[in-house]
Amino acid sequence: MNKIILALTLIGSFLSQARAQLGAAKGDAFEISSVGGTTIANNMMHKSWLYRNNAGSDWLSASLHDGIAVDVSFLQPQVNTRTWWERNPATGEQLWGDMGQTFMVLSGGNLGVGTLTPASKLEVAGEVNLKYNSIDGYWLKHTDLGGNIIAGFKRTGNDLLIRAFDGIGFSVGNNETKAVTISTNGNFGIGTATPHEKLSVNGNIRAREIKVEATNWPDYVFEEGYNVGTLSGLESYIKANKHLPEMPSAKEAQANGVALGEMNKLLLKKIEELTLYVIELKKESIAQQKQLDQLKKRQ
Image (tube, rainbow, N blue to C red; front, side, top):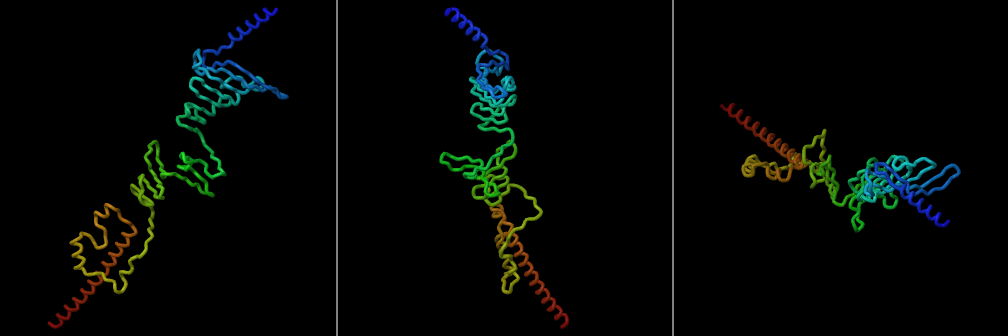
C-alpha cells in the first residue's frame, strides 16, 4: 500500500512538474504561488507568476511578477493584477504598476516615474509637487560630502529662495550655454557667463525709458566765481589731447565703456561751459560794435 501511495505521489509530482512550464510566447504567464485570505464577502490573494517579457524559452526573457487578486478578478499579470511588482533576473529591471499601467521603473540604477525608459538617476514624466519640509525649509537641495548646500530651493515666507554654490545659470533649448547668469556676488548677466557689474548685457537693450540716479549735477557751472577758463587754453588742451578736458579718450571709452550717469553730467557741464563762452563772446561782440559805432561818429 505504501508503495502504491509513493508511486502515485511521484507520478503526481512528475505531472505537476510537467505542467509547471512557462510558455514561449511574449505575454505568457504561469502561476507559481498563491497565498490568500477571506473576508466576509471576498477572497483576496497574493499571487506570483513567471511572466514572459519577450518570446523565448529560457529565463533570460522571463520575469517574476507579484500581484494581488480579488475573487477571480485581477488574474492576468501586467493586464489586470492590482498593485503589482515585477523583477527581471536577467537585466535587474524592476517595475511597479496597477492593472495595465506601469507607474515606476528601476532600470540600470535609474528610477523613472511615469516613464519606462529613464535615462538619468531620476526621471519624472509629469508634474512634481514638492511639499514643504518643516525641519529646515528646503524643498529640494543638493549637498556635498560635508553637508554643505550646493544648490537648492527654499521658501522664506511667501518668497522662493534659489541657492547655488557657484552662481545660477539659465540656458535655452538643448544648448547648455548660459543665456542668463546670476553670480554669487549678486551680479546679473544676460548673454554673458561672467557679469562684472550688477547688470551686464552682451547685446542691445531696448526700453521705453532708462532713469539713472545722479548726484552733484553741474548747476555749479552757473554759480558766481566759476572759472570756465579761456578759449585759447581750451584750444591748446584739445590740440595736445585730442579730446575735451575731463572727457575720456577714445581708447579709455573702448576699454572701459562709458558710465551713462557720469557721462551725462560731463556732457551737460561742457554744454553749460560752452554757453558761458557764447555769452562772453556775445558781450565782446557788443563791446566791439560800440567801439565801431563811436569811430564812425568821429569821422
